[in-house]
Image (cartoon, rainbow, N blue to C red):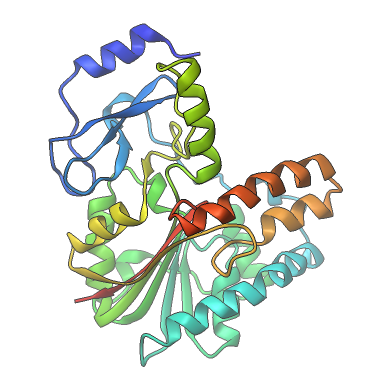
Length: 301
């Protein structure tokens, strides 16, 4: 249930500055987890006011991997390899060089596959648990962002990190500085309102116009939300040109197959049914630009 007093208090405050383009003409987009979500009037990104909560810290992320051994890491790598190989082939078609940085690399599946495909790859990761796995089992080279020479990278990948960032504008500027001229950044983010969510929101609005909006933003983790349009807008502001922009859903080239495979591994058939039904709707949503994820490839201009 929404705490009406908390929501009204949030609305009464001055409109927050957009964390991407710094515009101040945002409007209320909806309510989630007792917080107001704003849509920027310039870039159209949806966001929570960062001043109203403490942003999540990811140093302890991957705490579910404590018991993983080489066999389990190998399984995780195998279920992802085909999709990652396809993604790397697409990215490789944009550039001549093969220097790749994966930001938010986790255990380093993408870095490992890239190295086997002839890329010189390295990763950035905050979680010590993920770093341990990547170094111990996948021979991943991790690096600090500030130690990377400007204009030295052909491709930067950042999958599912932009929605978590407190200050994404500074991050995008830094990505731009590390890419070579005509270098490419690949971004995956959750769609703010996939078709399965949108349909449920429409049904709910008929019953209660003040209902909490079901979407892929929630405090304190997912604090920005995107459509194809808003992701393009956010990167064009910083000097990037879109090469590819689309949404994706389960069974697509740009979707992590881990989700469904993990249900199978755990014999969670109720989870399989629920996830499959939602995924069927979101695959239909891809036709309308409302798949589960937004995928963007952008060239530095």
